Image (cartoon, rainbow, N blue to C red; front, side, top):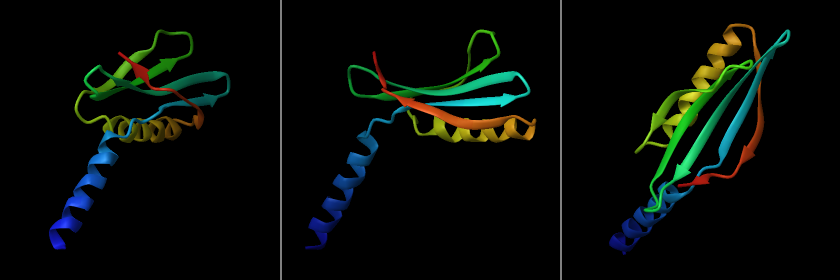
Length: 104
């Protein structure tokens, strides 16, 4: 019985890892200054998920701040820390929308 319970918990945790996350977009503004932070997830043909945190300042091209190949959950952590930093500079940030994950 104990072995069955351990197997069930292991299977449930594996399902959680396989869960594909949705892209996140955040808008930050202050007196005409507008910036965006986007968390983008990508799934390759083998089912591996990677992510990037993209930062756009006014009309400048987007810059990739972080990219994780094996630890896609870290992008959201990094994005939230970066949003706190922007708010520390006086910007007001809020979630804009969720979009579907890209397939490679």
